[in-house]
Structures are given as structure tokens and as C-alpha cells.
Amino acid sequence: MAENRRIRKVVRSRATIEGAGVHLRRAIGFGDPQLCDPFLLLDDFRSDRPEHYLKGFPWHPHRGIETITYVLRGDVEHGDSLGNSGTISAGDVQWMTAGSGIIHQEMPKGDPQGAMYGFQLWANLPAANKMMDPRYRGFVASQIPEAVQEDGTRIKVIAGAVDGVTGPVRDVVTAPEYLDVTVPAGVTFTRPTPRGHTVLAYVTGGKAVFCQQSDPYSYEAEGGNYFDMERNALLGDGHLVLFADGDSVAIHAGDEPVRFLLISGKPIKEPVAWYGPIVMNTQEELRLAYQELQNGTFVKVRGSGG
Image (tube, rainbow, N blue to C red; front, side, top):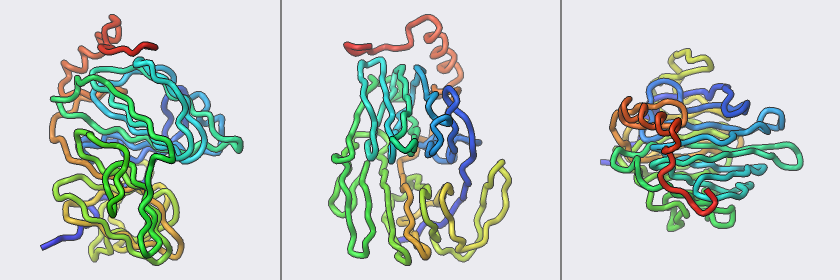
């Protein structure tokens, strides 16, 4: 018998500073790295203040993960040791597999109004794939299809498939689904989910009731304080909902449309050794990665421009 997922935990994203001084809000990345396995980090870098993002993320390394950058407004200039370079603009997605090692930079530029809106998700790689050749896939807004349902719900499909509409990001180890969903006021959105997969939603606008469950759930507020959240509460912008296991999720929009990222993936269930931009399985592997950074052998594959 099909079972609707319930809320396991709700987290309010927290303000932090990364890179060379970028102000952002982090929804995943504090505490136990196994909590949202295979996802390690979700950063929300929406800002209308150029001084909060222009210093950007200068050249830095990654190994053992994939980074997924999704831009809603503004431009992000990027370059990497494979020789890739270009601009991620409004509606575009960059899916980068760091694998054995890549060095890259991401420099937000904003739009003419000074707005820079976007998100970056880190997906872990299994031990068997951590040292795979790095690769880069960029998709412009016109390549990201949208499914429109009869009730007016609109779903941009980045990875996965909805109503026969398949996203451009494919052949990823953790079988992710990445959807940008907008639900009209008063409408309930339901979505089947693979049992055993981690499923989470991050609200980016409006408010909604998640799961309509009868029991309270754990809520982590700003600063990491915990308390029981009342059942059927409306959750708004900046809230991350982590679902318990089940066959589907249900999200009911309040008296205005709600927009959220709905993300799922197959858990890896392996040890995590993580320091900065490098994620391995053991401390020894982590030490080796940083030794290679120091002696210049970190990058195993270079492109014509790297």
C-alpha cells in the first residue's frame, strides 16, 4: 500500500559567509553530513546587494563531489582546470563533477538592477566514483523544459522526469531528481518518490503546508536551536523540509502561490571525511588530497585551457 511521506525535520537556513566574502544562507551543511545523504550542502545566494557577492569564489579545488549551480537572476562567470569558461545566466544550470580533482572559480556579477539570485547544491560521490575523470555540463534556460499540469502547477525539470518531460541532466550516479516547482494558491501538489531515496524541499517564495500531518515534527531554527513545530504549519521562504521515507510527498499552497526546489537522490551510505571543498571517505584520503594540492599533483585531468 502506498504511503505518503511525513516530515522528518525542518531547518531554517542560516546566514554565513563563504568564498572571498559572499553573504549567503545555508540550508544543508551544518551538523551530521549523513542527514541528507547524498546531499552535503545547499547554499542560497540570493541577494540585492552587490557588495555581498561581488568578491565571489576565486580559484579553489574540489574532489569527490558534484556541484550543481542554478541561477534565477544575474550572471555567474566561471572557469576551470578543464579549460571550460563562460557565464551562467538567469535560468541556467551548471552541473560539475569534480571527481579526481578540479580547480575552478565562480564570480557572481548580478544583473543591471544589482540582483544575484541562485542556489548551489553539493552531491556526494560514492567511493567507487570519487576518483572518476572530472566533467562539466552546462545547460541554458531554453534547454530546461517545463511541465505544466491541469491545475496550473508549473515544474521546471532540471533532472528527472515529470509527466513525460525529462530534464537535461542525466547519467548521474546518485539518480537525482531536481525540480523547480511553482504551485498556485490553494492547490495541493503531490509527487511520487522512490522509496529509500532522500527527499527534501527548499521554499523560495510563498508559503505551504507540507504533508498535512497530525503530529509535530523537529524544527531547527536560526542558531541551531531545536523545538517541536506545530502540525500543519505554513512554511515560507528559506525553510528546508526533509521528508521521512515513503512513496510520495504532498505540498499544499497557502493563500498565495508557493515556489520550492524539490530534490531527491539515492543515499550512498558510506563514511564521509570532509574538509572545506574536498569530500572523501577516510581521513587518510583527505590528507593525501591536501598533500597533492601542496605539491602540484592534485589535478589529474586537464583540458586544453587548463
